[in-house]
Length: 218
Image 1 (tube, rainbow, N blue to C red):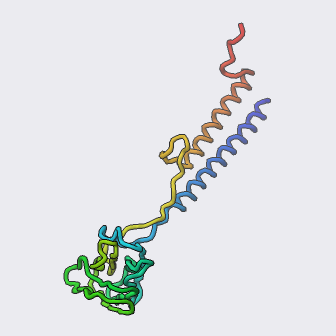
Image 2 (image 1 turned 180 degrees about the horizontal axis):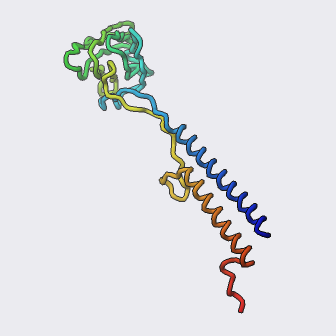
Image 3 (image 1 turned 90 degrees about the vertical axis):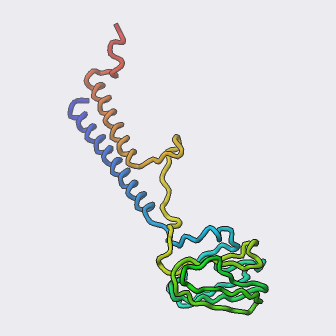
């Protein structure tokens, strides 16, 4: 191989390294775009309802009136949906789906004036209240509180929120589980490997042997 052939080979190798680096950069950008989206924003409901039966959640903002079933589920010991988010001024209609339940506030924001409905009622009964004051309204069924019949209503846009879901996953190096592995490193490693290959080829052309072989025969 003469100098011209060497330069042609070197140019091809450099182009391959640049292409590999560009591909790695594109993969990194795609991954960041995929994982950069935020999750669903929802209210931070109190720990009081963490063990509530059913445990469902619905964002019902934008509706003038919403319905919550009282005594829902196969055992009739749940509010459904359990946790809801509504606008201030929304009327919540509680509809009894089974017998012997009530709706008792666990805590109420100052000035809200919600007293719930403490009388025990049976299937077919309904009670409604318009929530004008923003804040968090956890509540329970007094005979079945210890059995997990609890719920909560988040009212308005001033309640504390959190992001649920989204984010995507970060690639992990199998040899170092738990350490993030970024595609940018692939491009850098590729360029380094190409440079090493070029240096190795240079020594072969110049000396006709590997760098470590010189001086081996006396």
